[in-house]
Image (cartoon, rainbow, N blue to C red):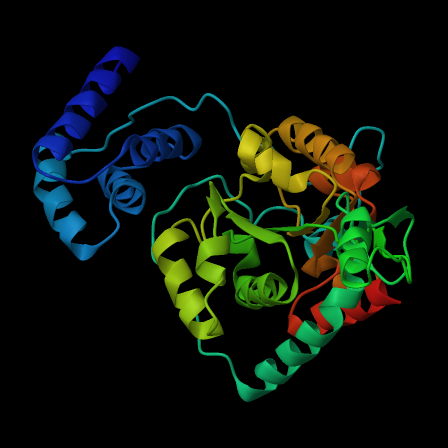
Length: 365
């Protein structure tokens, strides 16, 4: 099948899906077409599952998809689009870095588990156990001391300060017949810097995302100004959901908005989307930025490198917490990590709530 014929076929298929009532927004259609480019379907069955994973979000959606798909693609193997951009294998270091042995790459994370394929599914999270609640209580206690502070621009009444509080002095003088009995001061108090948490919820981070989101809930509760985003194949602002008092209720609410959990990995494009939004950009300026990710990027690492470099210039500190770094023998030799490690203030190992608490205590010292 020619390329033009394949494109006409796809346009007709997507047009009939919309006419049949399938709520497939432009973002899902884009993910579907990108999946066809990155993973060319081997046969009609493979094509069906690509369409189901990217265009549907429920059993009802699949009931709409099935008859339309059968009408357009029933019978025979099909090659829809040629592969135009093969994802690069994370099997070597950055520019100038020596290639690591295969066994070392497999142990440290060679990126073979990372994918660009998008999904749209509802994530599920188990209830928080008693032991986890105890660790979260320690985190809430120690987190304020680990957040760096900055002197506020606004002056407030204080016992000692650098400026006379003329208004309070004048008010007191009215009560004492015009006599000034003692001076009143105003000072610029210390306040916490804003905290920005970026959490990787892709498939390669599946076993760690649950604890990372619980940690983020504690950050929102314990810090004065905190914002949280998740990213897999897209960027999602999740701070409103994490403001709920009950941690399990907050994670249950996340299931409705974080639709790319356990899917592909697009760290660079996700960070680029964050930096391309002026409102989001303000959240990173002068903030303590935490990125919880294994750094296993697929394909071109240039967007990732540029985004991390700019983020490090905006932030007060940029910390990268990776579960792979919990291994004492870990070295950032994959292309993505080798390219960005020079722009990160600290690369540490965090895989669960306990290791997160250990890093918080270390930062508080």
